[in-house]
Length: 408
Image (cartoon, helix red, strand yellow):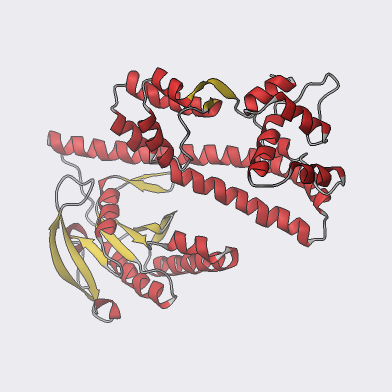
């Protein structure tokens, strides 16, 4: 759609043609030579409506625009995609048509970190697309409502935080920097549109590519694990290395939340501190950090003893540097290597051991303990533990360093 009449714009924005005419008369909206409006103006009308709902007077908005102290010109660059229109159907009518209920929709929107829609409000076009896809899971794939709602939890909060962080970054690193450089608000509005447009396109591409890369890695991990389980059930043996490598995970629960609350500079210092500790300790023990995982890190070591010693060192170092309490899980066994990453049951068990560990604790599998010789390490036996996502209980030990305060 290349242009909208005043009536079409009003209908899609959920307002009246008189309001559109008033916005145009005040200079907030600008119609083309043919009297029509751009699809991007739908975003602008919704932005103006949000300001009105917040108690800002329309005349004050118009005065700022007329005096050249504010401009809505950046809106089209910040929102490059056409705004989703309001459809004719209400939410209640639409969800009934696609096989859902308003109760399920309320749960979905809660999990998506979105405001729950009113049943008698007209449905947004993008909401219709999202809900239609959930409806197909029920009508075409046979999933029950509980499964559909559970799947929605994967996306909401993480994507909300990503969007919030991206917008906050732009405000702090672009808008505020331009203001600090002495640029007036009108000049800032002129500058940020093209900047936002270019950054938005790059961010959209990076987000899609990173997601596909992570998705590919996790699918690969699951494929390897399933294959290994199938081999075991079929009775096919697998050659075990004489000295298998070890995989360790460091988890620092609350680190992401801490950096989020600390502010940019303090967060950067905390991240630098953690990165320095991770690199120094792992390299000192002959290992390497494989990847960062939000509040933690995955490591690869050539021997289990080195992984355990590194874990004990990191527990103490994190506490010494004022970082959140850390916990470490270690497992030894064969792994599958691809593109700088490691996959397989050994990796999965190490991750699950870490989830089970308590703060300031290094937990080690029997497979890792069996690989030790005369290292200065003591262990406290915990017993066979049923770990989430692992078929058989895993015998675990708490590692103690004879020359370290970690044992206290």
